Length: 304
Ligand code: FDA
Image (cartoon, rainbow, N blue to C red; front, side, top):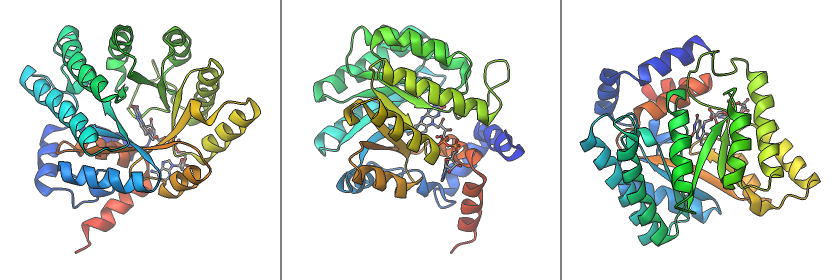
């Protein structure tokens, strides 16, 4: 983890920095990674992607909520996003963070918010994915997923390759026929719980993808890494794994070229489209991941 990464992770959790960033709006470059702070901007962004043959997953931004009131607002925002998807006939599902829905207040409270969202999504036949956040929320996310998976078909979650525990979770979730997004992992975690070396993360990542696919489960392979994409294409061809059993997932504003190329080859490609006013933490993680993104933002700072 670079010094720059650590800096942005820490700043991303700072409330004052968050407030200042919100006041300055999106003009520092966040608009490359975030559809906008208004519904209309999110709709337009998704329509443009859909018209290019790309699927999407909308995320109404928000995380680390500690009051019931804020969690209720986040729940309503998710429900509103489902209405937006349905009424505008968007080819999109919904991606959510349980820390925005009150899991840090109580698991029961969070479950009741999630049931409202999932029931609403079920009426519209929309799939909902629980994202994986920092390690402190990992077990809670999986417990909640397992509980709700017994009540709902339209739910999935995420596993992170940098955690030592993940191969065990892949095996455990096999009994739920889990629809999983598989990622390398985006949070700053200690060596007690997570690989610190990129080589180890990459190796574990391919192992989890292959195991999950060979178990016959659906995978969202969420990576911008050419090597990963190439290996997945080769592996699925060699093992006769249908293009219907997986999709490539990428973030808005990153590797648009690769998204289009894969879609043209008949692969299902889904773009993560975050929107809403609470974009600062998300934006900071994108900067922390890649120094090139920082220079992109700095250039924007000085543009008129
Ligand atoms: P990695 O960082 O390993 O880089 C490998 C190569 O990929 C680079 O050398 C470059 O070629 C290419 N690349 C990577 N980033 C690029 C960029 N910004 N621009 C151009 N090229 C780039 N994490 C998490 O903890 N919980 C979650 O729920 C999610 N959800 C999620 C959804 C989706 C759709 C995606 C794509 C990612 C996530 N993540 C996530 C983030 C994920 O864990 C990870 O941090 C990032 O995807 C970066 O890892 P990569 O495998 O993309 O590339």
